[in-house]
Length: 416
Ligand SMILES: NC(=O)c1ccc[n+]([C@@H]2O[C@H](COP(=O)([O-])OP(=O)(O)OC[C@H]3O[C@@H](n4cnc5c(N)ncnc54)[C@H](O)[C@@H]3O)[C@@H](O)[C@H]2O)c1
Picture 1 (cartoon, rainbow, N blue to C red):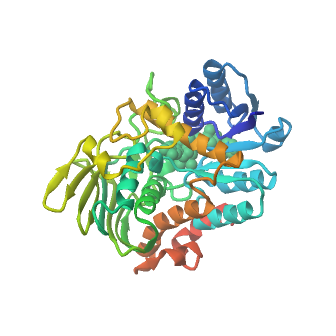
Picture 2 (picture 1 turned 180 degrees about the horizontal axis):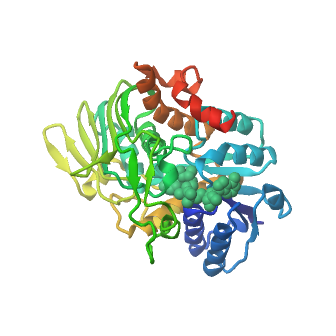
């Protein structure tokens, strides 16, 4: 079977991490993609990615800085890992060119940008997939299977708490700038996607949001030997800078199924770091581990029975991971796993690529489509919109752009 000619557009941290995901697939002998091009206006970033492709895959993708040059390479599919401001400009153009397009989360920088991508996707024969990774964690798959067979009964309450971060820069400067993709969108969109994956549609949101830490600090500035995928860029970033995007949201959500969500996403938390994702139902509760951590789910059922080992699988006899996840993680019915974080990260990105390729090959629909990508962005912005107008908002109002005064400034800056 001929391979799908692929290019990665955006060769920063995630562009590199996506390529490591492709390497995971190649190590399994799964080679549906031929990475023929890497594209970035910053030549050094594209060169860095191309170098690593050559080291890891033994091929030499062409380095380009413009989409026209990708056309000359006969590209059929692209993976958009640019900063969020460019997701809609790039994805709309690639869809118009008929190239299958996988775009990183957040699908667009605003709901309007998402709606524009959605319309371009509807008008194109090409496939649009959103690279949302957290839901593809095998433990979130198990949680979904347990909820689907109503192990804890009817869900009544979801508690999601993430607290930490103090005044430190989260990966990069742009994640603290409202017009670039603030942290509540950048991280929050993962959580809104997971919440809808587990419990279905969010209907309403009431939130208080804050910008607590107006000056963020980058401890890696000027470091001689910075670590990690992002280190070489972080060392060039300022030691201190002004943050313009809110860094904390405290919200109450309602779901269509009647459940209520209590949501705390605080990236300015000092002191004790906190993580909680718990779902209480009419017959028990489920405590979930952090995403991509490999920890196990704890169930408390009916008369205080506690299940926190492999016996949890007896409750879902039909639970099966898909083929690729099974091969990557080494089991088709996992209740926990243990890999160093970069390896888990690569494996889950590999699952995204497999989903994208199988959809291109007509084997199934993409898992996270334009509609879901838009919903997750809208759910994140619902929190800022609710704060801005001082009332509960419906997700529908935000998706249809009837409520968008918080995003107005961002849309203006994008010229949309
Ligand atoms: N799913 C995850 O776990 C996860 C983790 C990190 C980042 N992300 C997402 O990945 C995307 C990229 O984040 P990052 O951390 O790699 O950012 P980054 O700043 O490290 O890299 C972004 C790259 O995009 C390039 N770029 C900007 N405009 C471009 C354009 N028009 N065409 C081509 N290249 C362009 C930049 O030059 C840079 O090299 C964001 O949407 C982010 O939210 C997802």
